[in-house]
Image (cartoon, rainbow, N blue to C red; front, side, top):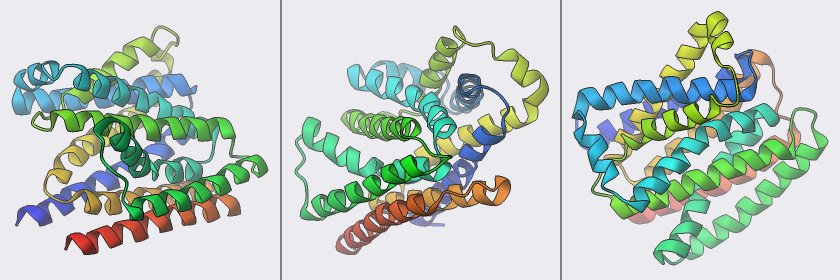
Length: 285
């Protein structure tokens, strides 16, 4: 098996494992911060065990030597976990994943601001269309009973934070930042534990809570490893699968209808990014 095929398989598996994430948040019967605590703690512990068995403590010491870029990456990645839970808890799953699809747009903006990389004409046009799509989603939130601008803002924060983390990590390309993920997750979990009582939830729901953490842990490792073997454009195309599959899964399992406006706005966002990435892939080829 060549590296390119291996990268496609690993990245696709990573997407498959992250698709049920929002469904787990919906079915766990606990307040959002409790879900966020266990999401961070279980996933962080699993990733830490894998990292220690793979690289020992050398990986963690390498992350500590990355300076401010490493600190920024760790903090931002850590905050995306509770941010995701708060987003799903306050708006529709469709709105959340459609807004998450804009991560490449924010990454391009931050790269322009902090790395001095120019915008291509393709990216400018993509941004314009995506903004229209986000406007449709925002309008639909005001018309829907299951959607809210509060959750939309949380989803927008997660998109910005993740894009900023990806921009920061480009300053330390030579260092594997997988060990930073458990540091960020577990640190945030300990911070959350100061404000909530997480133990009652796991006493009665430990199978689904542990499964949630396992899915996120496996997905995080796969999505960090797989993209090393394929282009960023191919990664962006595969990531769009989550935006399509996650709301469909929630709709099928618990009957959460995303609504016409969310579907229309999501179609605009996904369509713009799909066309943009296909053009980039063709040019690269």
